[in-house]
Length: 223
Image 1 (tube, one colour):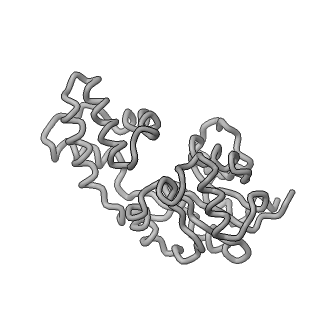
Image 2 (tube, rainbow, N blue to C red):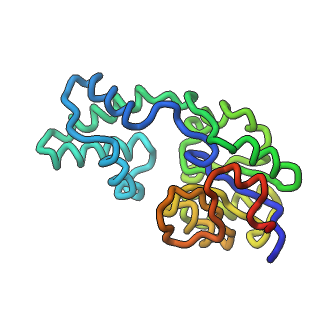
């Protein structure tokens, strides 16, 4: 197996997570608009992927998703967009915390790997999150897919990140939690995938599984 000298990390729900859950934010948004809660966060998450290609930002995606859900609930789509706007206003991108084990993993890997963050998301939003992480200076590059390059799972943002690190696909891995963006995107770019498991049966199958970020203290590609 070819040695690994570059590690690319997803950001959301891989390196960090919001302190306020989506369910808490959605409840606050309904209260702010002054309407009864007519859907829950799980419905939003289930519909999320449908709106990726047709929207240019997370804010637009949420507005269109909430509008579609509202219409299906026999409500004015404009009401759904109002709830989405309230949700965005409630969201504080600096109110994040590292995932358990993420700091130790980054510290251990930085000793003999070149590290980068590769994230789908707007630079301002993702930059606010990254700024709150105590290990933020460990990354030599940060690529905002969808802005600096096409969104994951396209291979382009992986290749762009590797160019910034002066690294090659066969000597790189990508660590992420998503089976729809991180794992297939890595494979499309010729990069080995490291999946942070949610307990489900993965499809597509990643090259390596993590039960927690702590597992990276002993990299699975070195076993």
